Image 1 (cartoon, rainbow, N blue to C red):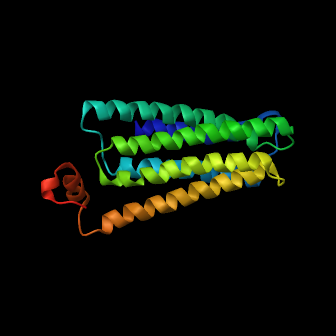
Image 2 (tube, rainbow, N blue to C red):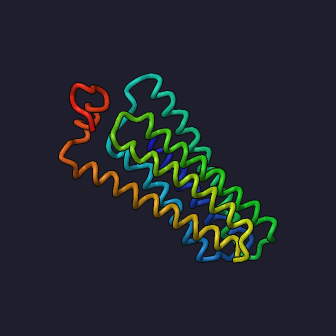
Length: 201
């Protein structure tokens, strides 16, 4: 499943590159850089729990986990369309506004699906679900602001989205590192959650 998500995130960036080369399009390098940051941040947010080797251990959790992955994959493909539109110069304003929406909603849905995978995962790393949910709300807030800002809409939007993405990754890594550096191991913390007799956090 992790390999599939990696392929889909790579597809998001590849679609942007192909769109730039189509019809002699010229890339906006600021937007292209922001696109790379956003895609890489999503990769980082997804793969830390996966690398930890944690998989749901009940049928109900596994179903939720798999359904959330379908949402992540669909969002990645939808995000590719929006990012492709945003990174080409000389577009009409209407197109860029639509592209803003094409980015905001798939990205928000992807982040919420990432939060759901954390909830379904029997591991203490799922405290970071709040980071993913917060980032999703941040994306919606930024998209709303960008639609009414007097500044350059597309550039302003993607720069802010990139900042939200990087901030989410930094907080995510900090929380996971705090768990790793804790006197209690991840297994001890998980045991404390699943069996109160073994102690509480």
